Image (cartoon, rainbow, N blue to C red):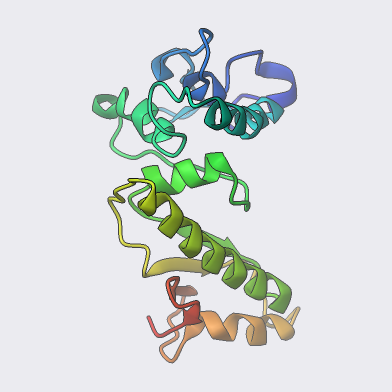
Length: 198
């Protein structure tokens, strides 16, 4: 869609990992930003190389040589290099709580969670948010100062087709709370893990 197929068009050291790495091959974020087919929309592509960060961080932590910021600060610091060029930065992370996702949470000023209206997905999201809350506490104890309040997170039910799948309505009910609106946006109280009214 944006003109970059990760497996074919993204070379070595051309992902966000290039701006986060701890060695001499680190690159400024401006050097890895790509133009897309859409005016005003730029992209830093990702591929399997990004997983190198998940392997590198424990090694750096074990050796005690975290130059350039702690692991959770590195993404925010990299993005700040291009602050003047962008109004909005969207970080699309995998649904895991690895080092990169924790860095994205630390760098974020808001969060949108998309979810399929199926009971297993709703339960999985709830567990993810509970674990995220615990891990945010851990990084705060390590000295992190968050710029956002994740006690309320917006969630969006996707592919909600009541006629085709009546069970999706039941699965989406916890997201609705007591005040459903037309488009499915709801609030989730991440700190307590309870789904509440918008």
